[in-house]
Amino acid sequence: MNRRTFLAGAVAAASASANPPKLAVEGGSPVRDTPLHADFWGTSYYGDEETSEVSDVVKLRRPFRWYGPGKEPPAKVATFEREFARRMQTRFALGVTSGSAALQTAVAACGIGPGDEVILPAWTWHSCYAAIVLAGALPVFAEIDESFNIDPSDIESKITPQTKLIMAVHLQGNPADMDRVLEIARRHNVRVLEDCAQSVGSSYKGHPVGSMGDIGIYSLQLNKTITSGEGGAVVTNDPLLFERASRYHDLGDLRALHEHILGGAKADWVAGSQFRMSEFTGAVLCAQLRKLDTIVESVQANARRVYDGIRDLPGVKLRRLPDPQGELGSAVFLGFETKAQCDRYRAAMKAENVPASNPGGSAILPIQPYIEHKRTVHPTWPSFTSERGRAIQYGAACCPRTLDILSRFAGVSLHPKFTVKDTDDIVAAIRKVYPQVVRA
Ligand SMILES: Cc1ncc(COP(=O)(O)O)c(C=O)c1O
Image (cartoon, rainbow, N blue to C red; front, side, top):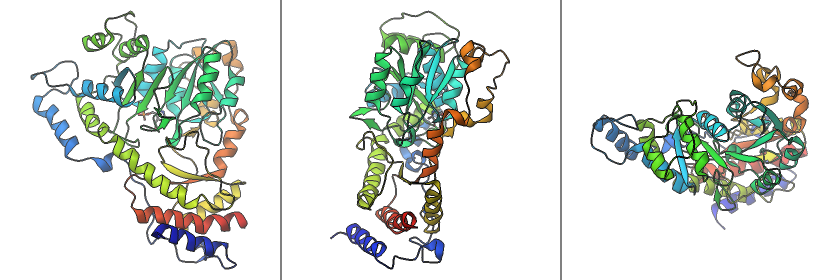
């Protein structure tokens, strides 16, 4: 019997017995002496590789990707784009300044504008909503399911003749149910944008997230799998979408490198934005990308240890995982019958020094006051001046299931560098707390 089996067995026996161990929240000894803390992932892997890549840029005095002094080494952003496309198994990748910029670029590449509707989950990050509104299109919210991702069965009822795009957002490391999303989208001739900001490196049925829809975006901000502090990327297999994305991110121009990769230009100059990635960002990302698989494999192994250690708990309900093999394992979430049980679980886990929290990193968008009141920079913004735009109502009434689900799940965050003791402590705390919380 290994240490973990012994540990889990001992705690299970105790918690199933008439005298379960006294919870720390009730004055018992905590599982850990100090709180377990999951730090930022990417920066905890920073080392000589990042330093060396950045120092190349400094030594060459070449911080701008398209020109500058010095001889021509493989430029950093161009190298990052080539290696990122290979890792994500797509034909094209484009480096941009942030995940939000990537979203705006991808929405523009899809030709979304006034009069169009875009379906997005009620639980996701502000940037998704903003990218739709900034394009002048109308955001239409769909409920999430117990994967915390968009519920495919709610998408269909939200599709109208104006629907042009579905945002499938892979939240907190968990890939969305892509088979069902893609099937609905194809049937209705609607494009799919995969937002992989919170799940960089995860996969669905063997496909890297971002590679299955028409276009994919990633954030490389501090709180993501790999990071340059700020940064983002767009991927696609479609040459026209790539050309439109490349143009949009660079004031409408198509630079020689991307024209060469495309084998020629097919689209015209359009008014675009300026979301070019700097060589410093590209340099850090070259080093970080080469560590992505190590980070992903490590956090997945840690998540597996926790899942294996709690799976046999009677009645235990985990977050729904459309592809358990591909999930990153950012956090291990348990679901409860009631919010009150979930709140007790969170309080008890905190006292054990293994804190658990409700799903985080996103916002319940329809209940944000600025969204509920359709606030925009100009009073006649095209998103909300059409008949549909005026009639659509946001607020709690459009996402009751989302509100309910998020109030009844709590998770312990994981880290790729957690030790065996850390994951043992998580298992021990859950096995100690969960049966007592659900029994109370
Ligand atoms: C789902 C999702 N999409 C997009 C973004 C935007 O990324 P960025 O912060 O790099 O602009 C985030 C950021 O956290 C996110 O969580």
